[in-house]
Amino acid sequence: MDFDHFHTGIEIQWWLKKWAHDHPDLVDLYVVGESFSGQPIYQLTITNKSTGADTDKPAAFFEGNRHSGETSSAESALWLAHHLITQAGKDDKVDELLAEKAFYIRPVNNPDGHDLYLYTAQTNRSSVRPQDNDGDGKLDEDSGDDLNKDGYLSQMRQYVGAGKGTHVVDERDPAKNVMRNVGAGNGDYLMFSEGVDNDGDGDVNEDGVGGLDLHRNYPYNWHVMPENDATGRNLTQGGAGAYPLSEPETRHVYTWLMSHTNIGVVNSMDTRVPMHLRGPSTCDPKECMYTSDRRLYEHFDKAGAGFTGYRYTGSVYIDYATRNGGDPAPLFGHGPDFGYFQYGAIWYGDELWNGGDFKDYDGDDRFSDWERSRWCAENGRTDCFLPWTTAQHPTLGEVEVGGINPKFWSQNPSADLVGEWAANQARFNLYLSESLPQVSLSQVRVKPLRGGQSDGATHEITATVTNTGRIPTALEQAKEIKIVAPDTVEVDGARVVGEAPEFYLDGGKAQKVTLRVTKGDADTVKVTAVSVRGGLSSATARLG
Image (cartoon, rainbow, N blue to C red):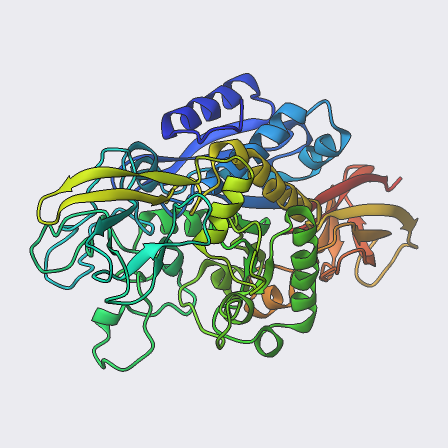
């Protein structure tokens, strides 16, 4: 398997089936549901089956390609799966991870959009469900047109003469790829997006394929789309869908997570800020998060940047919204908010790739196309921008089509760079997985009791339960919403007298527990530390 190209849907399915066939001791492959168009959505479970069931272990969930064009995220999910499978039996750290933890990996959550992006010139925000984006009562009737048949929908320019246009070739760009807006009556060219006014309403490409956003469709703090707000004056959310979880792709994530609450970390990956991005999406973290939870997230923010070098880390509401200036701004129905506030987990929605922003030549802390083109020229790259080629437009006549590569430079890295970006992101996801809570039972002791105990107990068992992970067995938020039952200790082979102990363990902390039991027929009992998100740990004890 290589990571110097973008894997098509057919290739991905082939690899998933091959891994499951070749490694039945580690890999299960199954279909979690169907996409909007009826395509199967595949998912892997990766764990060492000989050390226990996946549901008895702390687990991580990693998802790629929720948004149609954000194919780098699928590559990172594949890289992680490939690494775990191929390094099993070779890398002690991987063997330990697979023995103790489970990985649920869904490389392509949106196969419809993934196919659209890789097999056609079209792209869209997220789901391919038809949508009336221009409010004319029609669906998807004015998408872009690939006039020069190069497989992309890019920019279009028309030379109209000196002083008659709005744009000139940007003199700062040595490759002469980039156009600069100098205002009406000052330029040589008029600029358009590549396409035709298919519906004759005077606008071009304003109602393309789909239009909903699968990452605004989660139930926490979901808001209606603007056209559905009866008051006409409230806060709304574009792309939110008809109702929370209306879209099958989002619903299949939700139902999996709610039936597998052993999952303690999630990364539902996107492109292209680049950023280690997480909640809250509607409030200041210092005001609406538990302090200990927030500090744990801040630790992962810093750790993530160490793996990836991303320019930004932090919350959607504060850090994402203000990264280019301005005030904090909310997103509603956002996955990371559901993940923390309703699922009580560490949930990231990381944004891979930097859009070609490698050097800020003018030092203004912003990146423009001329800087992207200059960097490519200075580094001998000819694939960052599409050459300006002549095409015939049905109403404008002769035009030129070109500009920045909209798919494999602007939105995703070029094929030769995707492996590096996918790997760095996957290494952070491995770190999250290593940080999962993990209960460990030790120092199990048995003391016989004198006969005639008032509660009928015959023995007293003491043991120490330690959380060897970095993440608590329940975040403070998880405790509040009661998504995670308390940790406890169970005894198989004897009857526990009274209430079983209940507790939660912070990362690295231990709890000594005492149980009074009544001996049954068995001389040997099994003592087990039980944690929803910290897994199971057992030892035997002899009652005598």
